[in-house]
Image (cartoon, rainbow over all chains, first blue to last red; front, side, top):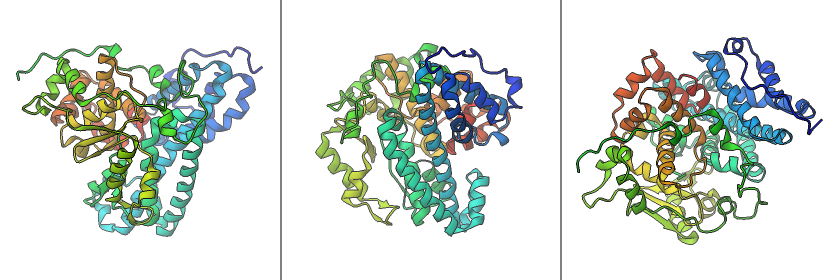
Length: 218
Length: 256
């Protein structure tokens, strides 16, 4: 079945259907784009990694239908660009990218939490940077933040090593995100924010902190 | 120099559809040279392993001066000799680039060690280019011909933009105008900052005169019109900015 033509829906599910969709429903539509033989392996990648990362914050988004539609369409379009038999590789690329996006988001939550734990006066001006996830990490305390940051840093280092080999183009396109997430996690581990990059630098500056940024070119 | 008439931006000049954007991270582009086995110098191999035909600052200036849209916004960035990017972009060979990068990095604290970056730590970073006090330094064998255009856009941006909007919006807008200029003059541009670009492209295409509103903010520091256009949906500007700063690009795009 691996090389059999796959029936491809030309349109995403109608917008009105989206609000009722859960991850399994969205995944089931995406799986229709894969050869049948590849679907079982792809299902957990969609449900456990790709969709949770791509749809993070869906529950609080003002237009969840539009958000879901955009994500669904982008993932489906990527699959359609490949020959059916190559689509499992595209799903693996989508997983790798989702992992980086999730790691980058977690890095920022941990970085913000560690900074505010060290500088409690910053909480009053942290505004939107103080996300529910960052607040939850603050509540757990510095030791837990550091433990999680160490674990995330290990994941991120492995991601970089592997992705340079398996998805070199993906790595090249997102390497600044990777570098910045890495710096942010290192800060979350050490408590040193003297050098920051990306959104972490924006946060430190927004709460009046002093930090030198690293300006990498692209 | 007098102001020139703006040239309208056509839909074909920028990627506006999700299919084109979806292509971004795909590994199987026909004719792509990225399928070779990895070797020790990953970054060089990424872009062919040899010397990159970097665009010079002088060439960027000429492209800008010949383009009504860009020159309208960027002319004030040119000095009295007519130089914008010229003289501010250095292309260095591997050894000289490493030496400058190491000096740059060693002036900073490594958050991993809480001490200044060592030479070995700086070398391990592996970067294509960096900016130091308004001067852009490019590695001769890294990046693409579009890298100098991207870095020039940073030189041309209003000094308040990055601070007002944050890293992701700044990079996305920089990349939006980089790809626009590159597409007009036939310079190859890879999919750098694809997430940020895609999110800013949604703003440019989702608002009436979106490119002009963004250009006015990006090059001239005029934020009011952009903010007002976004806030035709009450509260959208603040929601969008928070999502962009959190790196949640799809959620930000879904506001348009």
